[in-house]
Length: 576
Image (cartoon, rainbow, N blue to C red; front, side, top):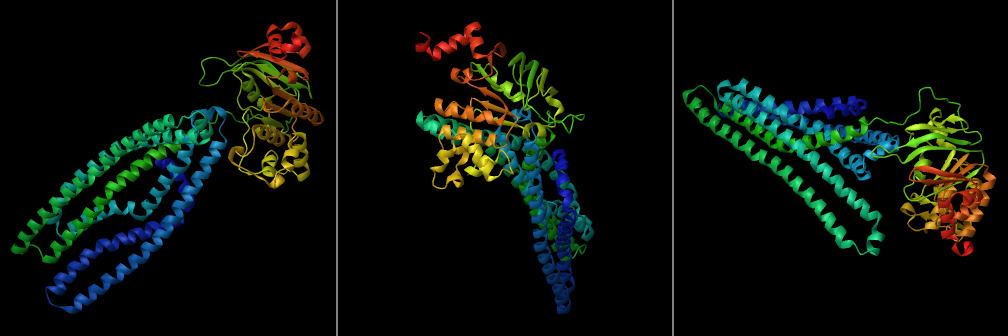
């Protein structure tokens, strides 16, 4: 309940429709509570006294208030739907904005499949809970309380049995709700696992077919869904056992009331209408308790979902603009300096970078070589401040990157990741994704410099050709060149190419590097190709997070054995 109260903030903009929905719900409740009294009057003063005028009078009033309650119910549904849909929309939008503001460290805490489940399934559960809360959820407990009070007013002796049974049942329901809440949190967690497996399989379907791993993946998926099914069944079994118990206890109460009622009618201490009214109230209370099994499930699931959503909202973003950051600070020439930089991922046991120091002048091209896991990509991520170093400083134009506003810093840096990621949309839209206000001329220039323009011109719709999800209808080289064009269109001061030319042939890569010269930007290239390093102004050689050598190609070839061995492995014939 505490987690749900935190999310009640999203209901504040809808105070008026909430008030309308609650008023109409209370009106429906009042009509439902007064109906047994009207029926008692019709029986005692009309039917038993054979007075049709009384029957017509109170019967007309009964029909009239019932029609008003029916109209009120329709309007209540509209108001409840408006509130719940708006609540869900605002919360989902706020969640998405929160996730967008996460640092990479924050994102490491939440698997993508879990975030998808939270933004879709968990929000939908709360959205439905709000609707039912304004429609019938509050009505059920209020009907139990109101029905008991009205029964006591009609005949306290007959209704006394309700004062004994209802508190016991309420305690039982709260106990069930506590257990069900824990079970449904486990259900949502196992749903995250199922979604994660589905996401992996859909993304890697080609690889699964190529390695004939369908049986293995089917087994893995079956085990995950079986665990989800078992926990869901356990939750539902617990919920479903509540209704028979509730109905059994209340039906015993009805029998007791009927027996004592018949005795009081015989002795003249009660009228037939009073007994009918009390039985009617007990019947309505029984119907309300039958709704409670559904309410327990809804509230338990809502509580579990609210807790999961609050985990997203309450996560502190660990990478923000500094309060004393300089608004006017921007990249002017693009010099980069690492001063004794060390870095360790939050979940890692050791540093991936240790005491890295180097200086890059404006406009220079830097090639970074090293084996897998040597820290090349980690070094890249520190320049646009996707992570902060644990020790040392990263300077751009002599200023610590922490003093830059994040938006200002990243707008002037072009990043091409190791895995080319394209978005659903046209080729033009994917290139312009790097600069929202890019003109057609800028898009065309970026495509030409990225060596993709000729390929685009051969496509049926050219720049309007639609790109499938993640560029599924393009080759690896085409996706890489489109990613490069997306970075070039913003004319960055610093360009980061994370092994982004691996799928390009030597001639295409050579033309690309030649085209980059006119951008007058400082370029960092992670590469495994010596031919790329030969044309760089500075080569950095990393090994297990340590910068073991730096200098030009010729300098490293003369002085660094590891670099020489890499050279000889790629140019063995020439070396021999």
